[in-house]
Length: 389
Ligand SMILES: Cc1ncc(COP(=O)(O)O)c(C=O)c1O
Image 1 (tube, protein in one colour):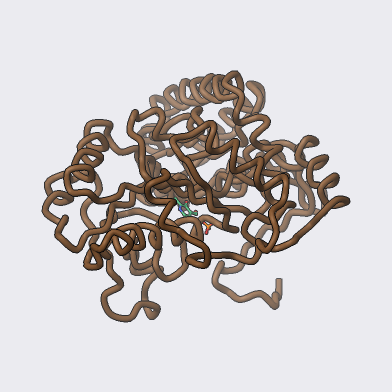
Image 2 (cartoon, protein in one colour; image 1 turned 45 degrees about the vertical axis):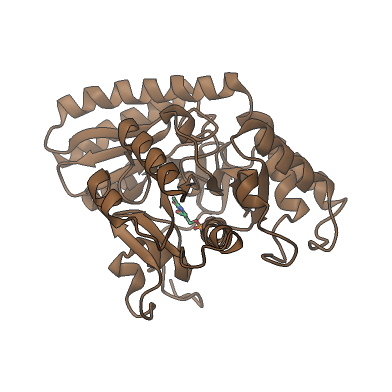
């Protein structure tokens, strides 16, 4: 298929014409079970009626004003995020990478504001993924993402995932803060250990530096909690959210405690589209579901059903599957065969999933998936494993 698009995504073979719930359809009505959910974005599936209604109603009322003016859905979504989380303030952006960028800027500005101008460096973990703008790629140092793009030292110090001694040793009088994903996504669906996370929190407090969680992928109900760190019992100072927050409409958010947010005085940061009322109207509609503890409970039940089925398949197909990882419906499938081969086999049976690091595959279904759809996915995974073993 010839395309006027740049080739940075390669050349996707599949094109979808419409989606409904957990299914995607090609123009010739081929139906695929979508366990990518737009890479953890379509948390209520495709074209959920409540989200469709919200965007339709908002589109007839107000699309955009810029941040020269306040608007109702944006104020409401910020308040709801604050009411339900550790945070006191919210900045709205349009994507995950911008939410992360905002957090990086806030870390530096916080110390600058308090006269600690040398505290500019940020510690990150290996195999992390924080986005594709310059600061996030500098934080992650994945050669595939950095080659030909970075100039000099961008102010990040990377330490091995889960290695507390290395993190302690990396803290200097120049350190502003630490960023990590409580559950790594692209890196291969790995949750950090609770003891490690608690120790990192303590180290940050001892050194007066800030702790930021990137919950762009793990947040908004994906793990059966509003944010994954709630399951791990450790609270950050800053948090990046995006993906599921808009259920498919582009939005990002940087959440912060007051003592850091207060340094972001008028003019320090901004975005033309951030806090766009169309985006936040959809965000509020997503919140109507995700904020319900009963909904989050169901996510955990669906996760248990999926994982119980995967346990059986791991026993049955040891030459294909090694283990499942992650929390809730953020499921990693570590492969014994090549993950690329398994993705291809999934495609043959019309199941869509996402590749990740550590030779694994991500299963990221919509959070409102039914029990029978979980069972259908398990049957397709079994068929794919059969074809490879
Ligand atoms: C943990 C994490 N952070 C940041 C990002 C970047 O988000 P976006 O692609 O919306 O900029 C992603 C995207 O996959 C992510 O998984």
